Length: 251
Ligand SMILES: [Fe+2]
Ligand SMILES: [Fe+2]
Image (spheres, rainbow, N blue to C red):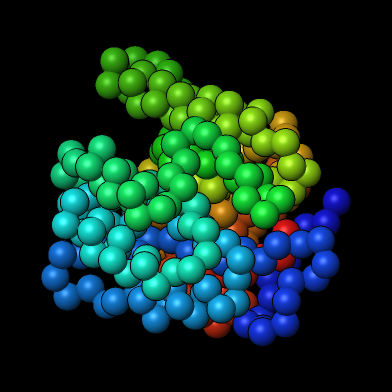
């Protein structure tokens, strides 16, 4: 099985039989004072065949913020696949934000899969809950049980999405982290709020070539699930082998 491979920025085409994918997360587009992403999207369109956005598209989940991003995305001439992040839920307008993204041509994954240029993308936002032996368990108050249930539900959505993938070249797109390695750099006290090992348990039951996520702005670029699937934290703040805000993968 060929693994995803990072490439320095190159104008050379992706090797035969592979598709070049650019991935980045946590754009946090604000209503006022945000940098324009037009030039970045133009640059990515020259280099990659598909753009993947790993959530926190907006800063507060405001429709106006989504509209600003949608306008910038007009500069992107390649297919765009995305999941939402927790910030996209903040002001309670998630349906409107989703509609604006879909109207802008973004393939928004909320537990579905889509195949583009031979690559199967399975995407879900994911949720918090912690990692390994220290994951939050369903015990005690209803509020704790609701939190665990949400985490399990997101995992089941990911499982359904992965079942739909027909391509041998599968990429999982998340906002929350599936492993603790790629959140390292954040304060250990907040690890449980940055992701859940339940996602990795599901990923490891399927042949997945690469997993991308965001959310942990101060995390670490690269890690692996216990089953060996490569995981990349592509939050725009993370230093990447490309030297740019986005990562590149030839899948
Ligand atoms: Fe973020
Ligand atoms: Fe986030």
